[in-house]
Length: 272
Ligand SMILES: NC(=O)c1ccc[n+]([C@@H]2O[C@H](COP(=O)([O-])OP(=O)(O)OC[C@H]3O[C@@H](n4cnc5c(N)ncnc54)[C@H](O)[C@@H]3O)[C@@H](O)[C@H]2O)c1
Image 1 (cartoon, rainbow, N blue to C red):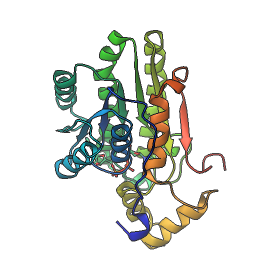
Image 2 (cartoon, rainbow, N blue to C red):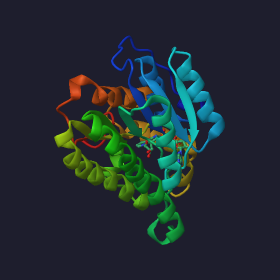
Image 3 (cartoon, protein in one colour):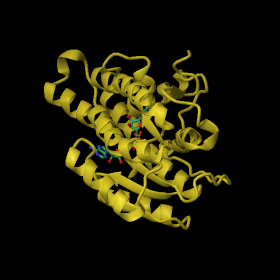
Image 4 (cartoon, rainbow, N blue to C red):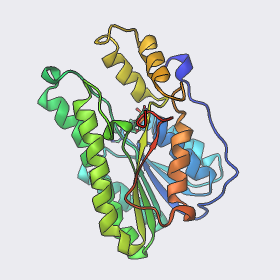
């Protein structure tokens, strides 16, 4: 990661989730890791799910430094057996799931004629089907307890689009539609389901987007990142913890009556 993309850590004095169990997908890096740490800081026991075992173990270890229990589970969110087995392990250990943050995701892009069917399918399998599988796995647990919060990570690309982001935008718009439908089904059970739509955030994923898009726009990776930051009304990218802050709010008692929403944390990008 280039130096100016190095995310800063954040500490909070809030303690809203003592005794809760949070399942975070994509917990090995970026936004998922920031969410795992935020929920651990606020008192939750955390299950970190990811395909990157080494980094995922490090996230779980970082959560434990806040004095909470945390486990690292190998889980490919596009594989139904992995997802179901991971949730079964969480249930075996703690007996409940109060919070799901579905953050696992990848970025690929390219002009229409360059996007292969395999590339399209792979991204949708992870970014959209993965969210569906995780929502489906935790919903019965939350419905039975008549409480819980599901937070699906979409993107500003779910609300607006740029050239060369076909499969990514389609997946993220899909997450918003899926979120509304699940929210409708779970609302009578007191379970809230919302989507969070980050703008450009300092993670490996934005670097992947820079590497793919910069050459097409005649820019270096560093120039592409600087341009994306200056395109934003707030003239900077988000820190991962700024996305985690909204996720924590949506899982808190203060957000009990908020469901089916898709909320931007993008420094004003979509508005502009
Ligand atoms: N960084 C941004 O600018 C940005 C903007 C909008 C939305 N998002 C979304 O935020 C979410 C988190 O991305 P990030 O920016 O933190 O990126 P990241 O690359 O830092 O983290 C993504 C994590 O997902 C994991 N992952 C990838 N495929 C997986 C799979 N099949 N199963 C399980 N885990 C898998 C990766 O190993 C990684 O740890 C993604 O859904 C992404 O689309 C990111």
